[in-house]
Image (cartoon, rainbow, N blue to C red; front, side, top):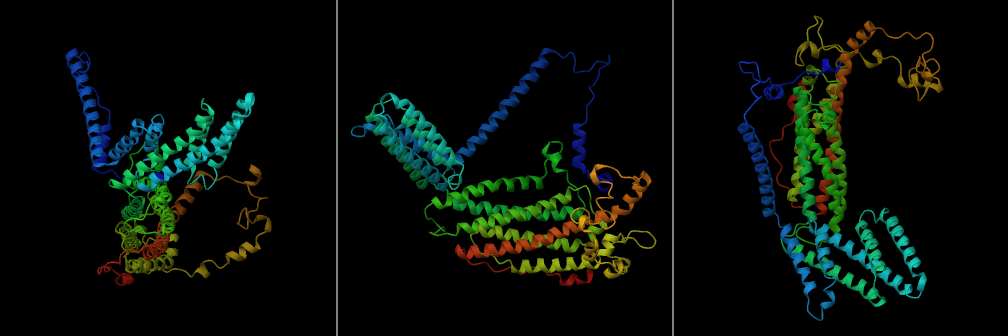
Length: 558
């Protein structure tokens, strides 16, 4: 059934790809021996040299690409500068020579706390500092009482090692430590074990935690100042860029899904793409990229509270509203993915049904895509946008689409897409518009609710068909009861022929329903972005475009 519904779509590029992978027969000489056999060692050496040269050129191109990225990035320079400044502690003259032996901890701290933006760097540095502070305070108390235990000191230390690891691990996987202070708990556990297990006298065990804490604070402050002073990159700006990019990408994918569906294109199954049997397409790549950014967005939202006020981001900036926008955009993306699933489904609507609602579906897709693009531009430029005209246009087209489907539902689902002569009718043909649709009450004189109410209570929740009960069902208890006759092949073919047209029409209704849901979610997202723009003091919106079309001229198609 899937093969009959799915049509092959091989263009010139696909055919050339098939020809490229076709097996090639080796050429033979006059003696019938393949020309590749018995070649001279010089030719073998030439092939090896060519292979090695290709590898070297690939490595050179890769290193050149990395070098170009390093030239455009200031992160390596900031990391090197902060580490070099912290290394001065290892060569400090008196009276700071106390840091000579422990200055390496400042360098290590500078190395590990550097992140892609200021917020993540400060967040990680505070985690390391507070974790070391808690570990140092606890280690001082443990070492103070350890000197009075004599021969029992090893057992005392072992008990605290067990207690420190267990307590830290317990807090590590509990909120709020799991979300924001996970790194602090891990650092406190490591530092605590190092401080209480170090082989030194009591005086060193008291001084060592304080010096360790001081060097870590110096490393954290050095890296934070360098990151803030040299081309700082803030998490707040990254969030706006990321959310805006996802909005625009969702609009592009939505418009492409609508275009592909109306053109009758059928994409490869996702399972075949994931297993490598089929080549990845642009729509699936876009979905993968947008889903992968969810973790980045959550990570950035946790880092922005640690950043100082800068630029357009003032004290009390409504970062919590970004969470609402990101979550609703994620759920909207699920509907776009469902549209993509219609392009990859086994059951496809025929072309005449797709063209029947082509105008409404096309305009709804364009309006929603334009709304998403405007919302993305709002985040990227921190400027309010006016989506009222596009929302009104989308809602009008949705109303026309709902009315057309409701008016011709019996035609769409009843298979009345053919004239009395049996020839296919196009959506614009007059006989199609004048097909007599029976009244719903006349076509279905019984009430569904009444039929359910008259069904025996034991069948509710199992089978809603009044004539079949669990007692008489051939599926009951996993056995075939007496009187059941299995379907023969002729009857199966007849059922397939009768239901194929009606079942395939459900694909169109599914696609249209998803578009209607997208309009509702786009309106809610537009309201959220408007509220965020007011709270975040976005710039005033630019004048609305004057070329927004309205569906009034298309009312005669309904």
